[in-house]
Amino acid sequence: MNSQLRLSFPSAGVLAAVLLLPLSAGAEKEPGPAVPPPAGDAAGESSPKAAPGKGLEDALAKLDLPGVKINIKERCVDVESTVCLDRGALELIACTRDTKEHESVIMIEALPKHVHTALLLIGARPGNPAMRKAINEEGTRWIDVPPRGHPVDVFLVYKNDDGKVVERPISDFLIPSDGEGSGAAGPEPGEKFPTHTFLFAGSIIHGEGEGPRKYLADMSGHVITIATFGDELLGLPGIHSHANGALMWQVDSETIPAVGSKLTLRLRPQFRPAPPKGPGPEKGSPAG
Image 1: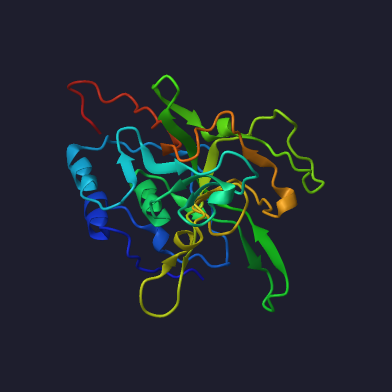
Image 2: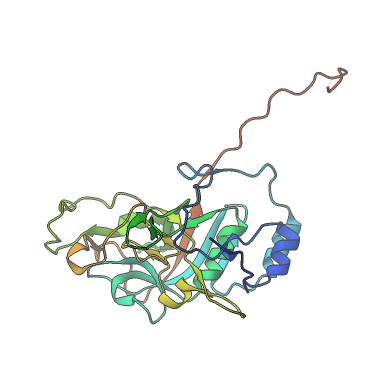
């Protein structure tokens, strides 16, 4: 069974006191009974009833999340990033420094757990990465459990050749791979990457005994993935092989800014508009 753990997320006291948000990343995710997906996973959560006030913004300004900016009004998270690849097959959209820059579009300096914290603070809800679950006591039969989590739209924000700041979905920078693939039906030449929406899987908290647990994406560098690794912060729906022959997408050298370019990775969770309120009582009439 999943056990509740205390995590050393930055300024956790401030988060709890001001936002009253549980750090749901503090639950260790083990291959066990799958938790039902949060309501609204397919189309996003409903927006909170009240707009954030200045007190909330002031509290967030005190958080120490290097390389991560929370935009409360826009309901998005901005992460400082650098283009690290302009050609070659991809396993990831984003990784951390000195991990998988050779197969990722961008690299971030921030810790994945800080990005996780920022997404929690604007109302996104994590689910789980893909995993395998034993279905008998002997542990000889297993099933694949697909990933789940709040849908998050992924964009890159940068200055174009005219010096204008533009925001473009990550799908604009991916094209079908030149490789022959694994025999499975792959994308056709010129086909567009099918989505810029990824699931907030939330990686995995791991560790035994006393002391802080480890956030696995901090160690692996798996921030946003196309292939399935099982410890990613954000990933695609379904399960996708990362064997060399199965990598079907590559970075588009014609659209991606030059390697070394600084830009912003923007993560925008999907939220449904709050349902309209019904008509209130007429003036002078009793409320109940």
